[in-house]
Image 1: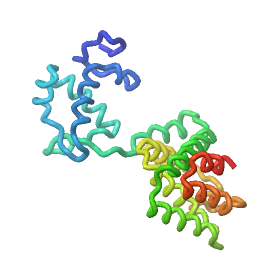
Image 2: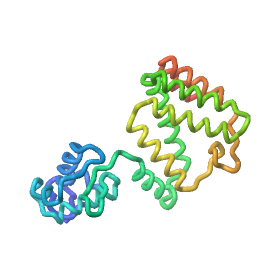
Image 3: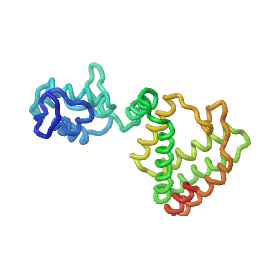
Image 4: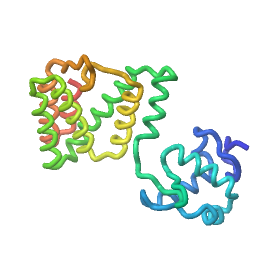
Amino acid sequence: MRAMSYGYTGDGPLADPPDALADPLAMRLAAIIREIRPGERLPAERELATRLGVSRTALRDRLRFLESAGILRRRSGSGTYVEALNPQALTRTLGVAVTFSGLPAESMFTALDALDRQAAREAATQADRAQLAVLRQALEGMRDDRPNAVLTAHEEFHEAMIAAAASPALTLLRSGVVGALRKAQLVWPDRPDSADAVPPPGLYERHREIYQAIAAGDPTAAGAAFDA
């Protein structure tokens, strides 16, 4: 039986992943998981099944799905634990899409730009002195004479910008996109480990404008500097 409608009782095999959010049992289980901190153990299957009023078979089906999505991790002889938020599941999905399903790599780079632009705006309102110092250090690294060192500093600047934005969603999505591009073994000109690594012209100057806008606490200017 498939969870294709809101009338589904939830005590049966879980639907395909696109229907998971319409599955009542999965959603009730999600409410329990949200109350448990990452690293803590989920109640035993028997206890959970009793609490939810469903069969252990139906419960295991949902647990397996959540484990495959990276939400839970089963430890042999110990139980099932809630995982910390991480981009690995998203990386796998996007990596498969790029490698096997014809998702254009160019669209991934466009998405990455959009995430970085929003990170610049949010960093302008969230960054503290320590985070600004990290950004400044990465910026100065872009003045190095060695191409790989410049591009490494470039990556460090964007990672510091994401950290300064203090947005779990941006962190998750960007890590997932970057991880997928790497898993797909795509090489782009300004990637530090590319054999043809060449810093784009004006890299330091453009990022200096972004840094100055972030340091000034001006999200509009930060977005405009990124666009420029």
